[in-house]
Length: 548
Image (cartoon, rainbow, N blue to C red):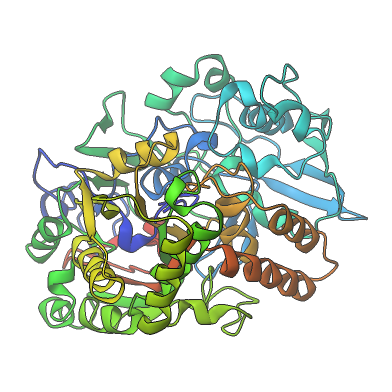
């Protein structure tokens, strides 16, 4: 919500939908150019989110922009529906020591403006993304590369990392600051996409009309109608594995999931990736067999409590975080609000990720215990009283499915802690993310994460690493950072998972966020399309969707 693709900050259930000032959808548009079942010229319509920022891959870390980036661009690798890594622009990625990688880029690849995609396209894009002077939200993802510290530090004048070297047009090397065997697995994420020269020459202009090399491209200069929709069409020159089975995808930005659901029911929208709370008990009957899916994915929902708020710093702040966590009845909320379709969180990642554990020491702080919670809050009051007449607020974007559960959490805090607690609605997701990114929050906010690549680390480093781009609460812990680094350097994935779970023990003590529940993708589609599938990260596999 890519909350990040995450990534994309924001889980699928937290995807915002902005104002729609035009109507229409799958029924009429899908008929254009179609003459028989499976005709791949049909335009598919899907719900989406107005991107937080202009569409630069290295500055896109939320779901709305992320899903667009993933269709406009192709990286060295991609991830199939099951989360497996597939070579795309990478002819090969080789290493003898897991520290220095030699990457060969497939020859004769082009951006849609005709410019060749070369080794330099990657090296220049990664250097641009890492450099502090460019202030890109995904800068943190280049931290492992040797020389990152020299370009990312405040006031840095260097703009190229020493660990990146162009060997020839189709070959470059990457030297990491330490051995990390899972480095190739990350290379399908948005931050690592190549960029054409025009993107670096004028990032602002490029962000409005991005030129990519992926399975889709913008449908003309007016393709992005801000806060209305964005129109993508199939790239006729695409040669990768994600070959479009349709003529294009139009993402429509709705004012609510209820409005999107109404369009889905009337076949004016082809794909809806999140069911409104009002339809959770009825959508299977409403849509009928063969028009919906329900699938656990790599995503979670949390509440972030910024570390820069004085009420939540120091010993008193830590006690308050624990009190709030233990005052939330996750079981009841998931049963009542979500009709049992969510699973209460036991840690900070997701059960579908390899290495997940539901028994990390310290996880009892996520169990409902109102008596203990009340005692912890009272202990905090003795150290530093809560400011008089100041409620504890949970910010949320009002254009998505959050009000009910936020109100339920707030009521539980009022009843179990005896404090003022209430939701704080933001009109749009974009407004919420603006405050979070600027670090100007006056209270807690609802957050979530949709994985960028299938790894425990992806739920940890980008969110809680010191200075990470999606670290909304400005959390910093030397112990946590050290364990992350150790986990990345592990000789096997199994060893790495054990260390990442040790890092989670630190998070369970500090609680930079309050984990709530794991997400489930509940999606539906119109009578006009078929072959709809939700991927490992909760996002529909748009390129496989066909018209009937």
